[in-house]
Amino acid sequence: MNSLLITDECYGSLVVDQNYFSDAVCLKSTLSKVLGLAIVAGSGALKLPQIYSIIADRSVDGLNPGSLYMAVVSYLASAILVLRKGDPFSAGGENYIITAQNIFIVLLLFVFAKPAMSTLQCARAALAIVGAGVAFCYAPLYVLPILGIVCGCAGRFPQIYQNWSSGQTGQLSFLTWFAQLGGSGVRMFTTLQEINGIFVELAPTLQFFGFVMGAVQNVCVVSQIVWYRGATQAIRAKRIAEEEKKKGS
Image: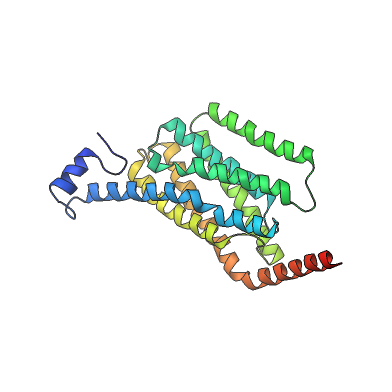
């Protein structure tokens, strides 16, 4: 019986026979499962710094709404792909958790957006996300990684451009984006180890390159958060001072 961390064959080789260094195949397979489960476990806290940043300041300043919507759709497509392919939980379980967190961030956008979003705007966004989820359940399997890549890239590019054009990153959380960068790198490794058909079948190959492209874009955003840190802090301090002044008057 296979466990979440090690197969019977690898258990016999690594644990019973103690071939810690001579059995490279089992070593990489087990390491991949451990890293994959670590990502799944860590995904529960991935967006918490971003969520805290928004709630603490009661602001979504610097966050691109289109990027937030696309993040939901991208991870939703990936979650349904993992579910429909029957991939092991260690190879994609974090998609379910991050999808839920992204939806919560969109709800925070509805609450804290300035100017305030109308009920109709919120309803349209919610219906679009639900409709996308239903469509993904019936779409051809090879379409889902393509949608994940397209939506993921389409979601990050507006955020990258907004950061560059405004010269600040607002409420973007360094911890969240840095963790996403690390997760993309680990997912490239675990996908190569645990998913069959890489560079042979279209769906898993596109899934792998989606992680590669995500890592590149995450590097861009993390770099912007570091580069624009001073300007972002100055703008935040000015905004807080103005809000305090309004409360005083």
